[in-house]
Amino acid sequence: MNLLTLIVLLPLVGFVLNGLLGGRLGKSFVSAVGCGLPILAFVAAVRSFLVLMNGGGEEPHEEAREGAGEGGGATGGGAGHGEHGICSRRAT
Image (cartoon, rainbow, N blue to C red):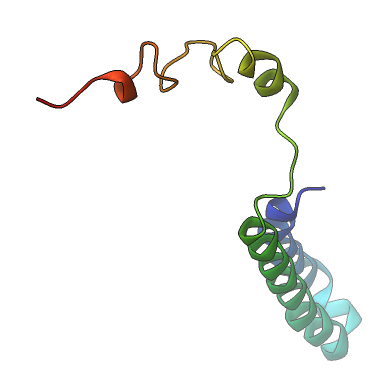
């Protein structure tokens, strides 16, 4: 599962668990879930930030790799690569 997905889902899962099971399982369960899952989401956010600062860390998607050699990129249009995009226009 992607780190960014975990950042969003962990607090949401904690909210749902505390809402559904908190009354039955007691104060210690609510405390552990209510504090633990947001802390895990914070750890995932820090890890995601560190991966981003180190150059991203993820391989490009298959579509992006296939089109990159043809100047098309992920969209296949070639925009922004100097041929047809804004980058090739000169300011006057």
